[in-house]
Image (tube, rainbow, N blue to C red):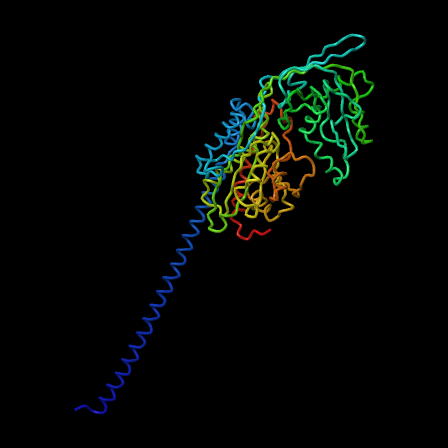
Length: 530
């Protein structure tokens, strides 16, 4: 028989047992929740650690690619492009196409996608040209103190052959015709009152008007070399001496017109005995805006040894590093520089500074971007432009046949003669600060060079750079360049002495490194707005 006491005790025991069971259950749940929380926290920490480690490894790999860009690499590219086997890389020649093929082979090796015509790296265009076989000759027949003198000049000290001259020999009376302009609407004609048929004319470059841009724009068509040569032939001239010794394939071919480019001391000989200097006559033309043409009382003989090839073609070499973002990959950053130089004029014009240097910078940046562990979200396109020296033919062709729509093109960067100096520049940064800041930061963090910028400007005059063509076509246009000079080191323009020994490989290395980091950062800027 169970007593009341026993019932009471067993009730207390039951109550205590129930309470203890509840406490154990609660504690188990707490321990379970704590375990889950700790597990989650440790998992989050592990994921963070893994992400941090991955980012750290990626950053280290990125810096490894950055440091792989070297002055030796840059110099090797420039040396190859300046080699005599390419005969000065004149656009339209087989030698230019050989150089273009070499560039394409590197892009293919690095996995840069071909983005020219029909799945190739080449965007073709017509590029008639003339092949200079030899330097030809130039002589002047004049009288001094009653004695007949025959002055024979030499290449390259005294003259350069006209790249698009007709072949043959002409002898004729020499007539100075100022700027060689006939512009009835401007009430200006350098040929007024002159008969130059069968004669050799002497012509200055540019135009006489130097004032207000709104007026200057009307003179611009007459500043083109093609107009001056065409106009001389229309007036019956058989020869032409172009003042300013330069290698210049940006001229026109006129059957029956033989010409060359002359140094200033040859001009002084031409004006000898006239009682006037060339500088004085030129100043009178500019100040009065009236012609001051005159017969120079001498005869000249010009010989040209040139072969015309009217049906030739050249190309832009185009490679694409595709963006990784599904949406942003349809936007593109363009980087361009002209691959061609001025060819052979009796000697090879190597074109090391102009513009093997810019193309070498592009190649190094393209290689680095193609091997980068950090992929660009936007696409980046490299255009090695042809026909620049022949009249900006390649940039005109690309702008008429763009590979990405204008509205999908973020910006065009141009490189031209980027191979000498002590500082860096990114032209157009004042106009596009949201682009410039990426390069400014890259320089501040890693290069520590003097970095200059400027506003993006459009030229009203005769275009002399691919960047002008892109700008006029509506592209946002910027440029990479260098500043400063190396003491004691001279550079040369359109000259046989434009060789790799005059380059500064160290500044080229830093240009390529600036491009690599800045372009990658710009391509991955998801907040970019214009």
